[in-house]
Image (cartoon, rainbow, N blue to C red):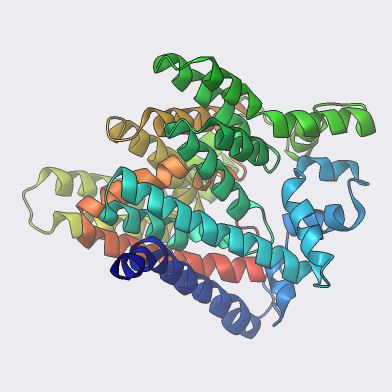
Length: 410
């Protein structure tokens, strides 16, 4: 009986509590506060109802679940999530309810799975902070609204954990379903092949690594049959993106918006001298704090980061997510397993290969390696972990309000 109680407490209860708390924060923000706000420029006035969870990509998922791929633009969205939603709709639920339930339940399952994975591979403390990071991170809103993030996080984690344990049947199942859910799952294939080579695994490991791509292979075959283009999902995504003057222009724009300000970047000259001046002051003061012996320097750096966010806004958050994740991978390269670190590197290579920064922060959030790395870091410095968690919760509320008003989030 004691073992059962411990199993419930340590394997299920904590991630369930964190999931419930974070989802309540989102629901209260979207259903209670957002309807009180006036319609913003470029957005709509939020209403109370299930429709608040549907915006942007949700419309495409609804069309796929209802009518199939009758719109060429919809092929950018992979089939598994809308197929599952369609199955729930067949039970008699409206699409908005079914889509929300599928994503939320998948996200909850992902938190429980990752919690137990981190607890067995690292420690209970690391597992708790990893779950807190995943649940309170502002982009975790996409684990609640009608998107496929929750499902992808679950399936990719199952495939990665199975590969670590050399359970290749689960590798094939989880990996194939992941590549049938999102194109970013393609990073699993080279990651598994590289680890198989580095660890000198047998032929079955190579076979399982390649079989991970069954999902995207089947979808490519479908696109070839019905649209005469096996790579239609890639070409459609490129067509949506605005033309760039050079490769990586989006990333340069994002960094320059942080350093000199959006107005100065748009004009190509300094029209607002205060932004770069404040940025310079914050950078210099942060450096001096870092090099000093001041006992509260950590809190001072947190305050400097908060002020910089007030000045730079979302470009700072997006830059910190993208490049901060890379730093975490490098810093914890000896603490993480070969599978996790290689998957992280391959995922970043896939993201940067496009040269575009649109939605990159959302893709980075889906890399479980980054969450585990941040969980390890915060477990070592829990006082700062509470500050970071509070800031994440603040951003989560703001992102929820923006999504409810149909303003772009990520």
